[in-house]
Length: 299
Image (spheres, rainbow, N blue to C red):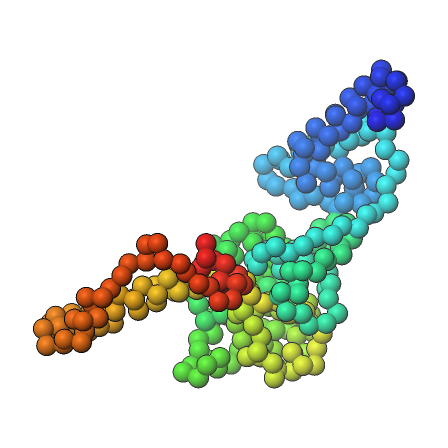
């Protein structure tokens, strides 16, 4: 189109622009589902789009496929796309169909590493997401995953901690790991690689992996590991502000007086502290360490 325009062949440029515009509108109207279907129909890659019970996606596929059929493109070769993980969420783990790492990586490395994926179809086999956490099941998240990925089997196992840090009160039944392809956990891992022959990825809800550094899964396998490093900023920032205010306003002392119904009449040193309180208006806050938590505190 540009070349036609530059050489003064305006009528031809307009006609070609109209063709491209129709195809562009077809792609926009059909979205990713319709475009994938059109690519699969005309160029042999893209994958079969999902079909829902309402027929809406079927219409999108047909409209987009017919619209793109008007384009006089040459036959395309499958292209390679680069994606970057920008957030920690279960669905990112589910949709990463291929094992893209050959060695153990922490999540900060994953965040800065482009992942090379070949454009192609949707899942070809059933996947099993195993979630082992000391909390109640996050059913709202599971429901969203099932809607977006109906081929996913989800198993949740609640594993409570003992009084010893990182040590659970009981063992996870080994058979749970057998057909799991993705594992989300805080610390529970298969005893060995033989117990998890299909495991493709392990995600830890903790910020680090030092607590499982002695596990055979960590030391003797190449299963990719990711962590939740970087997502704890809001919670810890609130804790920082809370402790800053409770400390500077001597909340512990006031709370003790309140519980004892003493109100400080006989605590002259405490009363002296309270007489020297200052608010934070106009003061400067220093943040030592400006990672994700430090930045959130500053914000």
